Length: 235
Image (cartoon, rainbow, N blue to C red; front, top):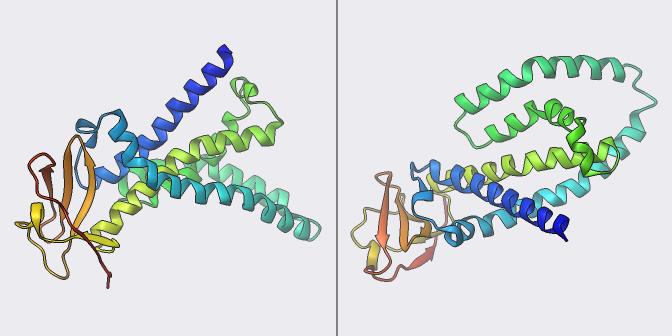
C-alpha cells in the first residue's frame, strides 16, 4: 500500500513538472510569469489540453519507432561491416561535443526546436544514467531501463517544445481562432494582418495578445464584457 502511494506521489510530481515545462515555455515567449496568477487548478488547466495532444503523438511514436528500427537493423546488419567502428567514433564525438552543444542550444537558440537539439545532445548521458545502481529499481533489462529513463527526460523537453511551438504559432499570426475586437477587446489595436490572440485564462484574468503592438493585455473577468472568438485563416 505504501509503495503504491509512493509511486502515485512520484507520478503526480512528475506530471506537474512536465506541465510546468509546457507552461513556462509557452508564457516565457510573451514575457509573462504566469505562475504569479495561476493556482494549482488553473496551472493544470493551462497545460492539460495541449499536453494531451502533444504527448499522445509522442507515445504513438514511441510505439512505432522501435518496430521500424528493428526492421531496418535486420535488413542491413549483414551488409554493414563498419557499423561497430562508426558507432564507436560517433559515441566518442557525442560524449565530447554533447554537453557544449546542449549548453549552446539552450543559450543561443530562440526557436522552440532547441529542446530537440538539447535532448539529442544528451542521449549518451541519459543512457549512462540508466546504468547507475539507482536505476535498477525500474526493473527489466538494461535496454528497457534506458528507454524508461530516456522518455522520463524526453517528456519534459517535448512539453517545452510543444509550449514554445504553440507560442510561436501565435507570434507568427497563424492561430486558428482569434478574438473579435468587441466587448472587452473593443479598445485593442488590430487589423486584418494583426489579429488579437487569446493566450489563456488564469487567476480570474483573461490574457490577450495584441499582435499589432506586441503587448499582452490582461482583462479582469469580473468586470469584462464577454469575449467573442472567430475563425482565423492565416496567410
